[in-house]
Image (cartoon, rainbow, N blue to C red; front, top):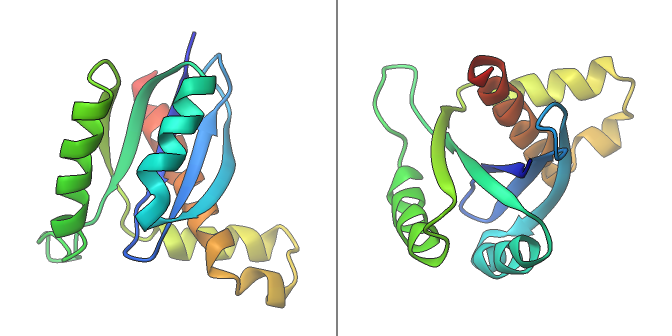
Length: 137
Protein backbone atom coordinates (compact mmCIF):
# COMPACT_ATOMS: atom_id res chain seq x y z
CA UNK A 1 0.00 0.00 0.00
CA UNK A 2 0.94 3.65 -0.18
CA UNK A 3 1.21 6.34 2.46
CA UNK A 4 -1.33 9.10 3.08
CA UNK A 5 -0.05 12.61 3.79
CA UNK A 6 -1.89 15.24 5.79
CA UNK A 7 -1.43 19.00 5.86
CA UNK A 8 -2.36 21.56 8.47
CA UNK A 9 -1.94 24.38 5.96
CA UNK A 10 -1.05 27.80 7.36
CA UNK A 11 -0.14 31.19 5.98
CA UNK A 12 3.44 30.97 7.30
CA UNK A 13 4.01 27.29 8.08
CA UNK A 14 2.37 23.99 7.34
CA UNK A 15 2.37 20.96 9.59
CA UNK A 16 2.73 17.63 7.82
CA UNK A 17 1.79 14.15 9.02
CA UNK A 18 2.01 10.79 7.28
CA UNK A 19 0.71 7.26 7.71
CA UNK A 20 2.72 4.09 7.69
CA UNK A 21 2.49 2.07 4.46
CA UNK A 22 -0.44 0.04 5.85
CA UNK A 23 -2.31 3.32 6.50
CA UNK A 24 -2.92 2.45 10.14
CA UNK A 25 -0.79 4.88 12.16
CA UNK A 26 -0.55 8.65 11.68
CA UNK A 27 2.75 10.23 12.72
CA UNK A 28 4.11 13.78 12.59
CA UNK A 29 6.53 14.29 9.71
CA UNK A 30 7.67 17.92 9.66
CA UNK A 31 6.73 21.58 9.73
CA UNK A 32 7.67 23.48 6.58
CA UNK A 33 7.50 27.13 5.59
CA UNK A 34 4.41 27.24 3.40
CA UNK A 35 6.33 29.03 0.65
CA UNK A 36 8.56 25.91 0.38
CA UNK A 37 5.77 23.35 0.77
CA UNK A 38 5.35 22.26 -2.84
CA UNK A 39 9.11 21.74 -3.26
CA UNK A 40 9.19 19.65 -0.05
CA UNK A 41 6.26 17.54 -1.27
CA UNK A 42 7.92 16.98 -4.66
CA UNK A 43 11.01 15.60 -2.94
CA UNK A 44 9.05 13.50 -0.48
CA UNK A 45 6.71 12.02 -3.10
CA UNK A 46 9.69 11.20 -5.33
CA UNK A 47 11.04 9.02 -2.50
CA UNK A 48 7.84 7.60 -1.00
CA UNK A 49 4.73 6.02 -2.49
CA UNK A 50 1.86 8.39 -1.65
CA UNK A 51 -1.71 7.63 -2.75
CA UNK A 52 -3.68 10.39 -1.02
CA UNK A 53 -3.29 13.75 0.64
CA UNK A 54 -5.64 15.15 3.26
CA UNK A 55 -5.74 18.91 3.64
CA UNK A 56 -7.46 20.58 6.56
CA UNK A 57 -10.70 22.37 5.70
CA UNK A 58 -10.68 25.63 7.62
CA UNK A 59 -14.24 26.44 8.69
CA UNK A 60 -15.44 29.00 11.22
CA UNK A 61 -17.82 27.99 13.98
CA UNK A 62 -20.56 29.75 11.97
CA UNK A 63 -19.93 27.38 9.05
CA UNK A 64 -18.25 29.99 6.85
CA UNK A 65 -14.85 29.30 5.32
CA UNK A 66 -11.85 30.98 6.97
CA UNK A 67 -9.73 33.42 4.95
CA UNK A 68 -6.87 30.88 4.67
CA UNK A 69 -9.06 28.96 2.20
CA UNK A 70 -8.15 31.69 -0.33
CA UNK A 71 -4.59 30.31 -0.17
CA UNK A 72 -5.47 26.63 0.22
CA UNK A 73 -7.64 26.35 -2.90
CA UNK A 74 -4.93 27.64 -5.30
CA UNK A 75 -2.43 25.33 -3.57
CA UNK A 76 -4.73 22.35 -4.17
CA UNK A 77 -5.00 23.33 -7.83
CA UNK A 78 -1.19 23.47 -8.21
CA UNK A 79 -0.76 20.21 -6.29
CA UNK A 80 -3.36 18.42 -8.42
CA UNK A 81 -1.64 19.54 -11.62
CA UNK A 82 1.75 18.41 -10.32
CA UNK A 83 0.45 15.08 -8.95
CA UNK A 84 -2.69 14.11 -10.91
CA UNK A 85 -2.71 10.52 -9.60
CA UNK A 86 -2.75 11.50 -5.90
CA UNK A 87 -6.28 11.87 -4.51
CA UNK A 88 -6.93 15.08 -2.58
CA UNK A 89 -9.31 14.98 0.38
CA UNK A 90 -10.47 17.70 2.73
CA UNK A 91 -11.03 17.15 6.44
CA UNK A 92 -12.55 19.62 8.89
CA UNK A 93 -9.75 21.03 11.02
CA UNK A 94 -11.89 22.95 13.51
CA UNK A 95 -10.31 22.90 16.98
CA UNK A 96 -7.31 20.79 15.88
CA UNK A 97 -4.80 23.32 17.27
CA UNK A 98 -6.55 23.28 20.65
CA UNK A 99 -6.73 19.49 20.57
CA UNK A 100 -3.03 19.33 19.68
CA UNK A 101 -2.07 21.62 22.56
CA UNK A 102 -4.16 19.57 24.96
CA UNK A 103 -2.67 16.28 23.74
CA UNK A 104 0.85 17.64 24.19
CA UNK A 105 0.00 18.85 27.71
CA UNK A 106 -1.57 15.53 28.68
CA UNK A 107 1.42 13.73 27.20
CA UNK A 108 3.68 15.56 29.63
CA UNK A 109 5.42 17.87 27.16
CA UNK A 110 7.06 20.81 28.90
CA UNK A 111 5.39 24.22 28.52
CA UNK A 112 8.28 25.78 26.57
CA UNK A 113 8.19 22.94 24.02
CA UNK A 114 4.37 23.14 23.73
CA UNK A 115 4.66 26.83 22.84
CA UNK A 116 6.69 26.08 19.71
CA UNK A 117 4.13 26.70 16.98
CA UNK A 118 5.78 24.27 14.56
CA UNK A 119 5.15 21.40 16.94
CA UNK A 120 1.48 22.31 17.27
CA UNK A 121 1.21 22.39 13.46
CA UNK A 122 2.64 18.85 13.13
CA UNK A 123 0.40 17.47 15.85
CA UNK A 124 -2.60 19.21 14.27
CA UNK A 125 -1.77 17.48 10.98
CA UNK A 126 -1.72 14.16 12.83
CA UNK A 127 -5.17 14.88 14.30
CA UNK A 128 -6.51 15.77 10.84
CA UNK A 129 -5.07 12.53 9.45
CA UNK A 130 -6.39 10.41 12.32
CA UNK A 131 -9.84 11.91 11.82
CA UNK A 132 -9.70 11.07 8.11
CA UNK A 133 -8.52 7.52 8.82
CA UNK A 134 -11.28 6.94 11.38
CA UNK A 135 -14.06 7.35 8.83
CA UNK A 136 -12.11 6.00 5.86
CA UNK A 137 -12.13 2.48 7.30
